[in-house]
Image 1 (cartoon, rainbow, N blue to C red):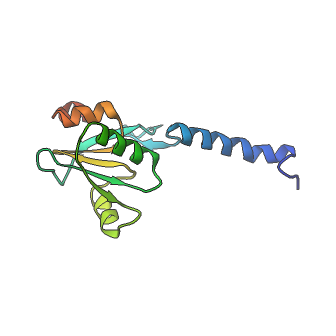
Image 2: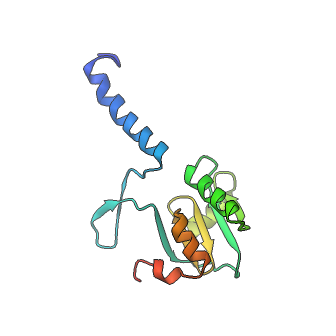
Image 3: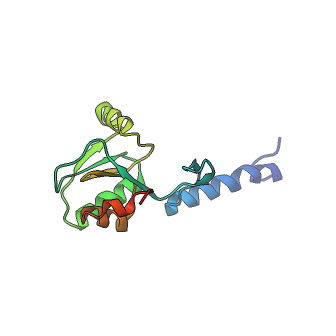
Length: 140
């Protein structure tokens, strides 16, 4: 068996290094099955109507303590002066249960008005805050 310095060691190190660089850069590495049934790259965010509408002006964000995108979303909200309620899913069974009920697969999950955004994009969040949710839906 060769060590890390041998040829076979690089077969393990290079892919792991690639994944670490992508994760640090905030690039989603993976695939999901879209509506067409074909595998596609994981999008940065996804907007859908929520089953738990928020009162006008209320924002709820479900996060994980180790999620860089969750930290980015919270920083963006704070920078915009937008008050929010945070629920940390890796520290609360109730928050985890709520996220599962909403059908989310990842964090952050933002509930804004009648919409939920899974993942984060500041331009899309700005549109949701401004009430332009319908233009962000997959079905138009």
